[in-house]
Length: 137
Image (cartoon, rainbow, N blue to C red; front, side):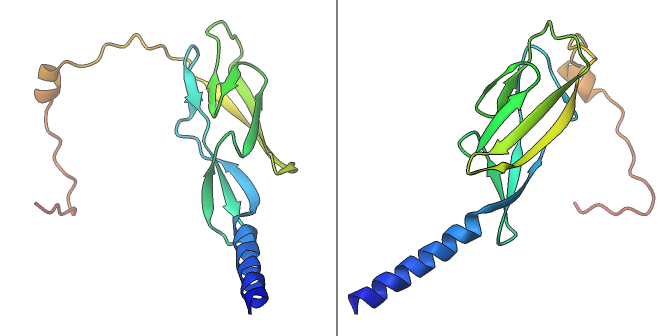
């Protein structure tokens, strides 16, 4: 009886591992550009055999790029970097044949734009909703 329960447990555990095996990976970037002189989070998701999507980090992936350095999923790009984009490649640690590469552009506009004050925000004209839209209150 113990052997049957043990074999049943092993079978269930093995099917659970199969469901978690990553079949494909994709970049899920939060922004359309990277910022020089800052850490930029590179979000990568993996699709499991059962169709579910899981967030992946540096424990699952090997991150490389043509510039900068990674700390976990965070890519730091030196402010002296002159090109307009960065090539980022991720490779699944458990299956190095499964990898993805993308080109991410560098933000060109600086951060010297002044933020609006509280007074400016409060004095902004209120936009009227377009006709046909009903808002619940």
